[in-house]
Length: 157
Image 1 (tube, rainbow, N blue to C red):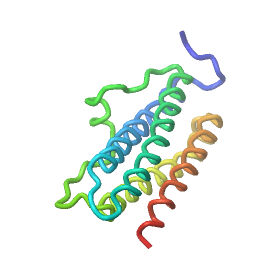
Image 2: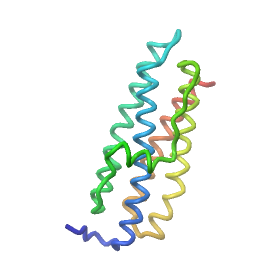
Image 3: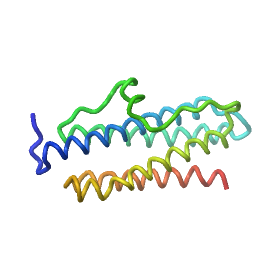
């Protein structure tokens, strides 16, 4: 059934396409954070194991909210690994060591990339695509990523 919510079909499709890219990035970041949780080694293993768990749990909620927002706009959320890999802007990296500094630096860069992507879409969603709801939604997501990035950054100081 078509969503009659005061946004044109064309604009809802454009917003949903950007949200699909965002969802793919969120899933990739979630997976990379799970990798850090599972494979962390070193003297700080226990604390970092718990820290990464906290972060991937937050990302799990973010992914669900992004997918639900796509559905609210009347579109289907991408939900396969193949789709995520074709849509994501993030990359998987291999490292020689599974230490906290390497994982943190990589995850921080991904969060910062997402923050920039979200910030760049706030005004276009509201002004150009007439979707103030999604603009507000991604503003909140940007703030969530800013907090997670701050927590990661604090470990590098």
